[in-house]
Length: 196
Image (cartoon, rainbow, N blue to C red):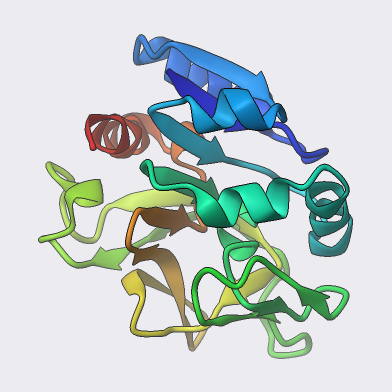
C-alpha cells in the first residue's frame, strides 16, 4: 500500500490519479498508524512552507516522518520540507537533508515562478531514474529552489542558477519537478519508486 500524506497542501489529486494509472493501492491519510503500516510513502504538495510545517507539527507528522524507514518520496513542496530550512517564511523544516531552500532572486530578467518544462541532469546509477534518459524534460512550478548539496542526485539550471531538482538520503527521496505532470518519464519515475 502507498500512503499519500494529507497535510493541507494542494496538488494531491493529480498525484493520486497518476498512481491509480500505475495500478497502485493508495490511501490519502494523515493517520500515523496507516502511514507506518504502508510499504511506500509519498509526500506531495503545492503550497507555503510555514503553514505546511505548522500542520505537520499540529498533527505530530513531523516526528512521524523523521522515523519512517520505508521508501519515501517528497514532491515539490514535499521535497523542500525535507530540508533543514526554507527562506519561505524563514521556516524550520524537517531537517532530514542538510540543505537550504532559497527564493529565486527577482530582477534578474527571468520569470518567477520557474514554470514549465526543463531538463534534468542526473546520476544514472540512481534507481529513481532507471530507464529514463539523462537530459529528459520534466515539468516544474516553483519560486523556491533547493541548493546543491552532497545529497543532490539531479540538477537543473534556470537562467544561471543550478539547483537540486532531486535529492536522496537513505530511504528519503525528493523531486522538485512534478512527475505526475511529466508524461511517460514522470510515470516511469513513479513506477521506479514503487519498485523500491
